[in-house]
Length: 198
Image (cartoon, rainbow, N blue to C red; front, side):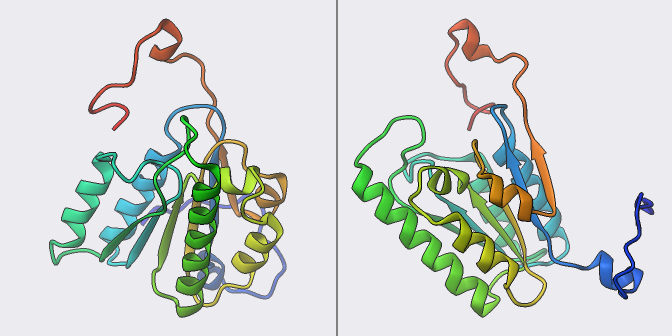
């Protein structure tokens, strides 16, 4: 096991083991590519530990064939690591807006399902893919999200992805990574391609 040393050890009365096993809220945000990919990398680690995983896709179209979905479903069904449940919350509306009312309702329904699963401790890792968007757009109340995550029971880890993550979420998170774009093929007019974007 890696033996990294923290730069600060708080005087919180917890043992090293208790502090190490604290459940985390992780946020991957920013304009660069790789936010969801990084979250699915965490899901692979969680699968290897035998943790049940719940993936909730809030923005990407239910029609898209996401490569990580297939891989994680196969792994989840393999009988070796943890189980994997994949939930697509609506028809997708990240880059091409469809019905705003329908999408907003789907986002709210998705968040209600996440709340139920957190209360029931259904999963050990939750990937709330592109969930920063519904908060940024005001479809889901950020203060409620922060409160629910703060008060969640057990040892449930939550990773949230998406651009424009609200400041209150960033403040409440334990780990925040901001992905920045330096260069992208789309800048030169190249559309996304198989194996790279999906």
